[in-house]
Image 1 (cartoon, rainbow, N blue to C red):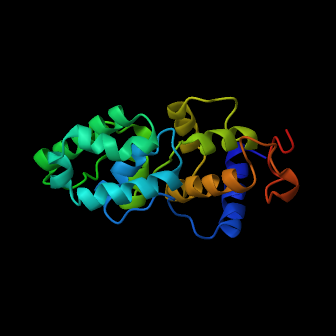
Image 2 (image 1 turned 90 degrees about the vertical axis):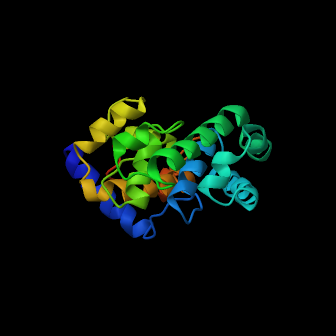
Length: 211
């Protein structure tokens, strides 16, 4: 079985196992997803979802958040860890959205990367979830699982993993595939315990099942 064949088979099985493929960060506007994904670094999505409710109560739109003192933002987002750097990035990002894009999030990958605090993972998440464009989000779940499954070989750097996956994942499947990897990584192919290979829908096609 080639990597591409394995990838296609894994995609189809994960579709059946996790029919609802969606981001676990709560948002109803694109700029809110930008804020949440920055806060999610080294923090759980569940905690981010709680913290942003308080943030948006006080600063309900891009303009309000752009005008907010960094110290005020930091007080609210502190529970997510790295409060100072995250607050500074959020403030600078909202200012840039206000001043250069009329408060709107650009639907261009390179323009997203130019926003403060936005890396490839965040840009891909926005492109896929908000704009429905081809995207591969190489978070920790994705990197761990595609290595175990044999879709990439011992590659840990997110950008390199993304590059390899683009070769074997159909563009229209990338975003949902990555969301399903998160679900599978939390439920079955776990990081902090031994993977539950006996309950895995991929055990007969996963290259490293049981390892």
